Image 1 (cartoon, rainbow, N blue to C red):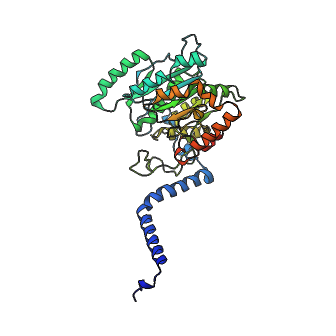
Image 2 (cartoon, rainbow, N blue to C red):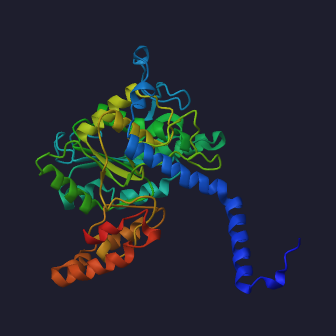
Length: 397
């Protein structure tokens, strides 16, 4: 029996062709759809329905007979080993510039790669300028750059000589003898919290930031002072751009691939984007202790931070003006509130000049100014492709 195509109406032909096309697309893309849809469904079910992270204690805590481990991280088995300091400044948080050793508002670690001299210099000239922060904002902020050694053996010696010369001039590099690679980011996180615990325990807050981040230092200092004036006194704080119910990425072609052998569960604990976040001094101490007892094989540092915090009973808090993975829109009505923005490898100086211009605040003064800036922020932020910077909620803050 043969189908008489003459009897099939034109609309039926269109329906058949459309159905066939959709089926073909589904067959081709099913693996990708399955990864994104199914993994997120499993993750949210685990995070919000099951909501059990008991495995943090049962599977990721190192046995008590291994608690004598020393500082460092071998990047493989999850056990800490001793990485000697190649460059260190143990007196960085001490007395100087007319300030007492007890008034460090913020210890700010910038995660930098050895060859990124231009990025470090741009930070020193703008938002990371300690003298500016003290003279203009009246805050004692200490900025240091966390580094490993260059992974290329052929270039390592020349890069190291350049780093030593750089540090002789600026005195703000903290370097340990581990390879500075993506898979050693957790090592760099441990460096930050161990150094802060040992050499700057009086800091009221600790911040970790990438070297392509922009920090609106006046707004950040104002925010930290507001926290200190609250009833909590700036305690129990971990704030940034929060990722909730995120699933591990299982695609082997992804930079963030995490195999089941390393992390078999369908959901990560909540964590903040590693590009820039702030913790209070008491939370920094808790994270330090967590690194002593938790398996450190998780090489994605912001996820490892989430694991440490969850084990210590600390939850991240969302701040709508901490950026995620993307740049914030450039506009005076944004600058008035911004704390961080990510992805600034070349434009830090120009953005600093624009964002800290006193004329910026004229746009949002008064009722009409607030109304105007709210409308502008709605147009700029309430769009899908800005979801990794500031959320739409920031438009109404």
